[in-house]
Image 1 (tube, rainbow over the protein chains, first blue to last red):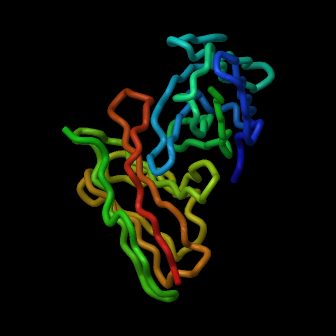
Image 2 (cartoon, one colour):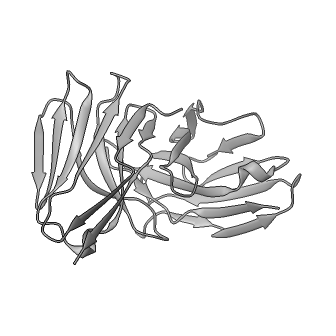
Length: 110
Length: 113
């Protein structure tokens, strides 16, 4: 069922580093691309999202870059902090369904 | 009001039994999704409701899985004749009218012995 490919599976950075997580999708019917953050034992929570008519969106330390022609999008976390350590999921959604990437486990070392 | 709620939070059942998982979406949210999330994986889409209409059930793995939302609010995901491979976290999410953001519930962890 995987229509969204996410990489890397895991990522370790030092505090202050800029982790980058990449996703690629296949279905051009998708029109909304959110990123979710999930802490152990919790459900995914929306972090930031973008529509395909925009190439970049920034909210605080989080930035999404979107390349419609390549069907790729990525999440950048500026000045990462240990509290950002979590699993991050990209997703692509259309009118009736959404597809999630397999997740990236991010560890930010103090 | 409160966020999405699900019950039970944990369910242990024996292979071959039927289980019913409940989702209570955020009040006023017309869209409801069911997902299954294996450990260390992303949520896997199962089915989607718009009000009471099941508009997409393409993710249901087989005919042992069914879902309903008869009054356009609470939804039930039913798994008949459970198998060990059905063990997973089952999450639902709801979305408001005209919005794109899905709000996830805490999930029901199902263990089939």
